[in-house]
Image (cartoon, rainbow, N blue to C red; front, side):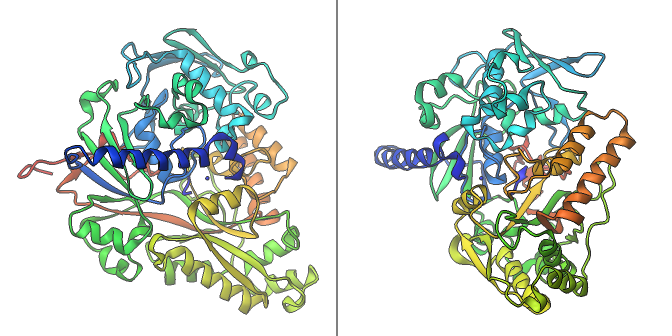
Length: 552
């Protein structure tokens, strides 16, 4: 999910236009609502982290954005709240051809947009081609490259959309032809990027389609409004195919990066659920972890650093290896994060299905200094000052990212004799800077979209929109292509491990730091329907509040 992280390339596809439009809309809403009765109290209030960049399923990649989008738009499958595995959604069933390359999805007969129009197979053709259209600048377009000719269409080598392996056989039947058997394709169909989008609104309003009133949605909730730096209010969608099992009528989602404010809202009953460990006051972490309403779990997530390999001297792999070897990752998890995280010598977390990652690099300052000298900077002499970028926290409170940045700065100064300037920027600037390669080093993270190594390794293919390092390695790309076409599990694992060895031991466009440990807080006596799972997916429509006096 996706990152936990969203972009200069997207400006033409509506991010800033959408934000400006929402600000204008919010001003009008405030004028109108001032003459109306007070709005109903929310059934559930969630503290969600950063302000979303967009709610367009084709372009969002950040976890705060994706959580909201998943409530508004659905695809062929959705994630089981208990296991994270794909289960039927807008498609009630599917058939798979004997060769494993063709899926035929049968849509439910009662599907409609929240505005009443039918949802049909042609809407999926339109939505997926929109993701692949280069003008959309969808960072997640690569998730569709398993479809025949999708990669060629996205790159511009193929201009005929009818040649892409997707077609509407009739109004309720959507067929997809894959390049090769893809055992996790149903997991991909549950990703928000592949959700069906409202063609009628997009073609009518263009980049301003999210302002449509009412906004046509396919998910469990409608968008009541989005007030920037205030909240996103959702209302139950009565036309949703599974509305009978959606318990909460009103849900408020609060954008917030200040851990102290988030905790105070929770403690005073103003918020019911806080998603992320980063929204736990660091000084209280050791105490709060022992409380029954603070819930820890394992999931597939990695915190790492991106390196802009297009800038000197960071374009030298020896420099990048030296930076990695100088980092004491165990000190970071024991001194700063303190939430059960484990040092990450590689990108793909342990526990990923059918995969054993390579050894990766450890902590070896002596070898780091030798590499730095070999690259022409003995003792750091003559090494230019470079910057380390991380995103700011709302309210300016000391956040985990800042503490990690300071620790890295000190380690590189002590072990290598090089100076690093810290660059703290607002979330949307952070995302745009990454995509435009306007940084030297940047903090990053990734949460697996499905339980397979490719959800991590595909990120750094040359043509993946989520790469954001400037790194291109034809051999790495070819190994992943071969792995994705390899039916034998052991051979596939070996190909993936060889690719990751290039990534984390030889070339290092990224520097892995630690594997996440999940931690959120809510009172399980009052809230049910939240389950730990490896992809950290917790659908809002599965959450319910218990009645006073009822058994949890």
